[in-house]
Image (cartoon, rainbow, N blue to C red; front, side, top):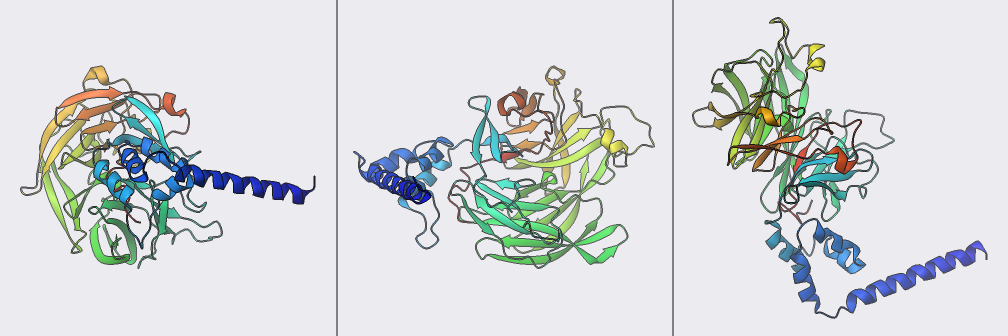
Length: 422
């Protein structure tokens, strides 16, 4: 058999398969409207398996900017608000698979894959909000490393968009992806202005992308050099992005700490100071989380004795910090934005739960706050409403992760903006 005969046979086979596929989809014993209604009741992630049933079902999940949402997508949206969040969630570096913890089954499971994205869409150093993921575009032919663009993708529809060029294309060190109602999202990028640098202070271009108008807006923000403009140190509430300072990290035990508040609607900002009660040990990290509609500050306290002259922010000591968890090593404080006071909510966890390491970057699903570091250790969890500490299984056995693991967890809430057009 010649190569030509083989190609003709493969083409005919594909044609027969496609025709059978379409016939099977169109020959359902039940009315299509009823089938769609039944399928829309499936929870996540079972519902996304409908994409592989046929080409017709795959098309039902796709975005159509001209026609808008289909009847099936609207039915899914009505029920997606009841989908449970999956937290903590991780992205495997080697396979681009998203792995998350399911509290109902008390187990880790593979949710989906980002293998559908183009090769120059970086899967690492991503930020996640609902069903949306934001990352960096790095073309293989690019010789420059400071002016990379950004992309946003919806993992349910598999649609993606490369965002317009930013006014300031300086290196993207910290980016934020924010939920903006049922039909929009916001991306915030802080880019350093190299022409406005003073001793102890930096001026950034706070660049805000609005998906509803597909455009960037910019405002100048001048802050001290102790601010870490990362999502791990921020929380978003009522049009305002709050970011904590790391001032005097490692030696601060009581007094005040700075916070930046950027309003993404009117593009105004202010730097305020929060007062907090005395602590018995210096803190090694400051993190913001939004839990139950309330902004909480999570402090990780120093857990080992050290000389008074040694600052945890200085090299090489910062790389030798032992992340072992001891009783009362974590402090949660509630933020009162009106009085600008911090009040202690709890300290912990109990010694019985200190089975592994606790990292400085907690994540929350809105009810629980999760702390973890090593793939082989259990993850400590705290229920804010019930004031209860607990733990969940380790990640490595479920995901086959052992070496090269880094705690870069995020909450995955697919029901937050299921079919949002990017």
